[in-house]
Amino acid sequence: MKTGEYYGTHWYWDEEEREYIICATWYFEQNYPEMPDCVSLEAIEVEEQPIDAPNLDLKIGGAVWKSVYEDGIPMDAQEVDYL
Image (cartoon, rainbow, N blue to C red):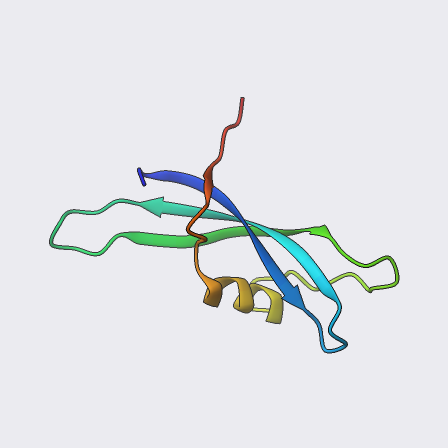
């Protein structure tokens, strides 16, 4: 991966086992060989949710944010293209 923004899909289940599909934007910075690469979670948004499901709280530090952060950047993450 080269330095830049990437997006990837994550799945989240609430306490009633309803499935939400989350799109997360990550920033990846390639570092020097003697230092680890840096990855940070920039934003999350719900792409799909059940019709009867309540909206999720997507604030930084909330349950959904923590779940996506713990999943980490997906192996199939795609580079963000703003064109």
